[in-house]
Image (cartoon, rainbow, N blue to C red):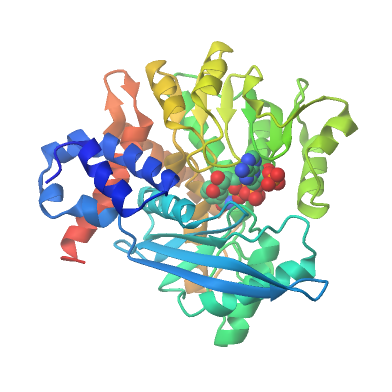
Length: 445
Ligand code: NDP
């Protein structure tokens, strides 16, 4: 039996060499759980830790496709089926050149705890490819998606594994993937979520991660009798999550002053209003342009190759990617008066940044709790597909708000530390208990 977190991590690192994001995600969870595990030795005795860090299955496959010039290109496809103790594997697909097995294992691991928190019956998984949709034509993206699904379809199904979108996988890609699945399997089922409304999608799914992140921030702020009304908010990213987080912050009376993409950030001290947001949505979702163009159009500052965290703000919502806030940036945020960081992205804060949030006792909502709204509405999409009905926008949105409130409640229950709530510890313990107990119930599996 392991006597310390470090001893356990030495084994994890030796068994998963070079997968640094995966190590980082595991260390964060195990450190949060350690005291709890000493008080509940049954988990250690039955080797739950050793089992829970090992994916149930990892698939890796070749994805050959032809570009518009008629040349063959080869990418690598992955699906990590991490844990099915509480339901079918569920989690997004990421298409980005940085994708590798270690990144998808980290995302799959996080997904297990996140899905457990949602109160819905979903196991955890994640997949994707090192394919870069940027600069590709629609036809190239379609041919890639068809090739990817030609292999993936053997491994997924509405009761087995239900992928969704993530970075680089939005409505267009889900459409191409679904079309190919249907063609190969000759069945119309809820095998993917994030589908368009005409063919099995759920209202509010596109908005759900961003909205959910803001609903979570609202809950967190309410514990200090605060709200988003009148607050200045820094957001990173300009994709699905960032756009809808911006929309909801505006609706709740906050002022969003930054957005970014992988080339740089824009700083608009007057705030991004609904009209400017519409421009961004068109720029990013239709023209597939760069955020720099916003700076030119509205004559605001553009910070080339810089992240937005030097902007003065009350609330920060990182919504781009992993490890996008380091310790220095966390300190800058706090020095500038930021007292709430709520994560729309997965693991956007480096461990040193989290230490600074906790030392300064600011409100810190970790991604696995705060961004669980997306997968929650994916779960609701699965329910609607099974029942072959569609809920109204109000019905889905109300359920989403209730789920985010419930997740907040679980974090408080397990993360309370005197006056302070350590949401990270609360999320990790609450997420763990349900999965670990289910694994114990199901024997040595
Ligand atoms: P999108 O692809 O729609 O947008 C991603 C945004 O982040 C883009 O602005 C992109 O810029 C930027 N970005 C991506 N990689 C990097 C990088 N390495 N450095 C700097 N910026 C980067 O993805 P989503 O909005 O769906 O996802 C954003 C985050 O939210 C991810 O961490 C994802 O895992 C998480 N998430 C998403 C959910 C969903 O439902 N979509 C659910 C839960 C979490 P560029 O265009 O230049 O690449």
